[in-house]
Length: 320
Image 1 (tube, rainbow, N blue to C red):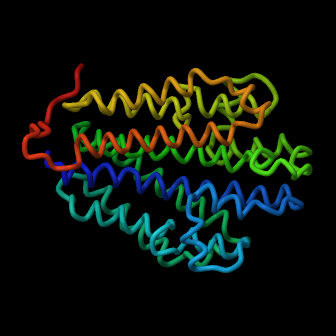
Image 2 (image 1 turned 90 degrees about the horizontal axis):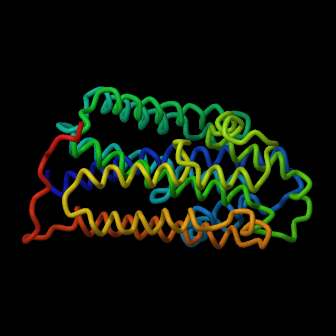
């Protein structure tokens, strides 16, 4: 497979996952506004977490709900709409690789966002609009899993999806840690249970959490579940495990696997309770996100940057 095609498959997986999880991030913040009306910094923290401060300041003077939602829905570079457009372009130029059914769903998603994006700005229609985006993304993921051969192309889609999912899970956890991001907000401590339940529900993880953790919803167990649990599909540890499995099917995988192992050890060796008690969770999540960025760099350097002396990525079957 050409490195150009492999990269497009990887970014296709990342962009679709980014669309879904940006929608999830917006839902959890909207719910927090409803449940924690006295907390004033929710939308400002969302801009910080998405890493879009500079771009946002170029377009808007004031950080408020309407501006932040409009920015994340419709910005030309950092938004749900731009991610869908980039995913569609990657799919269009590799139409011989992905199933026709998946290409149809990508187009439906693009048409849906262009036709209905204004509904997301108003709070009364926002939840349904974002939920519909998430549903279409899930339909696309299911279509690929059910109709695309598990070959190198699918491995790159899956790698991109899981790396993006791990990154966005850390960001959603970070969004929930308002009492750690701004410890001066005493009000947040009064609603800790509501806060962590919103975090779990934004990742559709509430029921799975109750199955794995037979205790009330609390910060220590929620963060431990979302970062360390290897059975929950949106857990960071599970996503890294899946990325590692995909990389093992490809040649010249030493550097990517080394970075993945380092990230896994960093998560496994840290005590979540201690991090929460010492208010260091935000800094630790930053470290995890840097580890994920290192994995991306290794993936890109190994398989996407053309090297005339490197052997071609050869199509091969997965082991039985």
